[in-house]
Length: 290
Image (tube, rainbow, N blue to C red):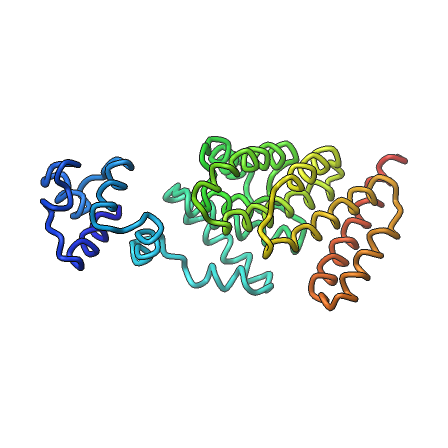
């Protein structure tokens, strides 16, 4: 609820309840909202904000002090450090917490930790029943806000190929809706998250899904400061080609060019990805021979 924050902004401007709600809603309803006793309709909230001369963007920015789920410092520490024993302990603690309260936010945090472990050990520590619940939540999302995009991106390695592709396409179809919010930050999260999803699909040899997503992401008009994602999409395309034909020259040439540009961190990341994909390709070819 954000009513108490509306009240603070109203009082700062010396606007009375009667002046704020006249012709919009009753004073009693505004009073109950300002005391966090009821919610008001979105359209009503927008009219009330307009009445006190505050835009929705300003309101959300000034509402950062609103109560939000507190993240245990251990969770932040576990995701920042590659201390596997510590990460596993915190993951189990978070899973136990979720199993007690069945809070969606706690499931998202547990999935984030399991995602980190998967990246390190290539093993899924999220119990199957929780994997099912997690995807059930995402499958019901109609408006992919920053909250859900971030949660999906932070657990994307835990899903099967069909789930990755399906949710990724839902997010892509939602991009025009996100643009209405006039923020490019969501677009940055989308490009980063779905690029990770494509990499996961490539590593699983699900090249058809990966190719379709690369094609869709290339259609997105990016602002200038996000143009580096075009390089990542080029890399992902070359990774798909490599998995198909085994020719590593194009992808290694790209990594070398990135290094020559002085982007050593990005070049190292690409090289590490390539080494993993190379091992995966050998594994898939071995299975074909059996």
